[in-house]
Length: 484
Image 1: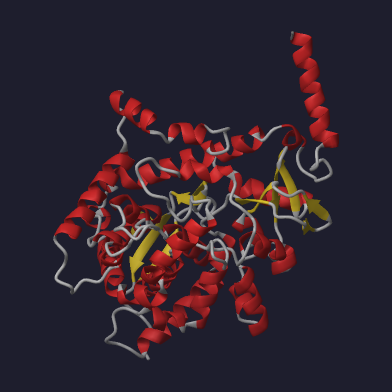
Image 2 (image 1 turned 135 degrees about the vertical axis):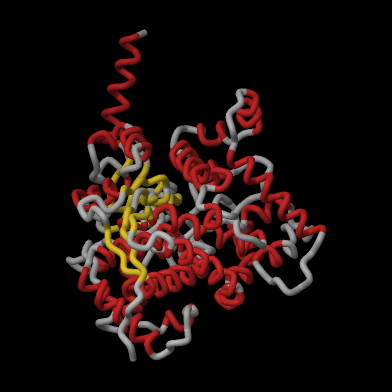
């Protein structure tokens, strides 16, 4: 029996190394044998560095597992994620099928269903709609700056503050009120930690032969409840359902038109009123990662810091009675535009490969990829590809966005900061842009900020998203600024 098993294992190893359809594609030796080495780095939160090292070492096509590839390529981006793509999502997305909730944009594998779901919410997420919600967003930032002023001259953890304001903005737009993270200076209901833990489990266990699906079932939910394990996701879901139902039963007076106002008018695919579960799924979004990325790169590049702050000072000096800035006004500040584009290019929120089944006749570099092979592009790796961004692809250089208009348009077309520019891009992109521009413009105008430990500015943990923890800075309110 043991000899039979040994022969089988040896035969399998030889097949995967020399006879498998992907045998000629470079990658680590262990990747030819099993994907468990990859899962190890996933579980340790190190994938943001690993994926870059792999492509630097092996090139544009890398074998991550016996039957999985990571690629970087502008044409492949269009082929996998562009309009009219034939590339289907892989089984990995099944890990996001949450019991007792409706299908969501991210997890659904059905192309028609995805198109329906996206059309249904597109009006709420359009830039024109988001700008109508801008006073609610500004109110959260006003509270953020009021809170930080109390700590002027002191050390604060910007990871916590950016998370707090991002979640409160989601609350304002999706539930009609802030969630209380800024007001209480706490992680209300343990929500932020619960979502971080949830992404870790679902993103990583989805690669373990159906384990993601097994964990995400009613049976497991009842078992953990019986064992007394607190389900923070469940607590928040119940709270949010109560909020949605209360608004449904007692509509606002018509003066408040937020995203929840739109969600409550939605219909399901059969034309019936959307369930509370569907409303809940569309309500989640956060942009704290982008805020921290922008602040990090500005604080680690003194030249950029001073040039950007001068642009902001010049803007406000001509408007002495203006205490805030609108998104449209901030968007006109050319250097701020370049800084945000460059920082989020280098540190996009999504790190893992956006897996698809390779369509027919797919060729990347010199390799022909068999149809149906799980293949994906990591936004972090794509956004640092020297073939696209030049030899200084890993450098923070905002000026690259200002040097040539045609080149800038090309950069914008291939930038995967928000999952690309195609039908599957992040539906919350416009919310993220409004928050990023308003945050950076107002924060750096109102405060001086420096990293407490430039040698260890933050700790990055990849859990599908690239979460930055422990970003400790010293903030000082600016009381003297250049005059017009």
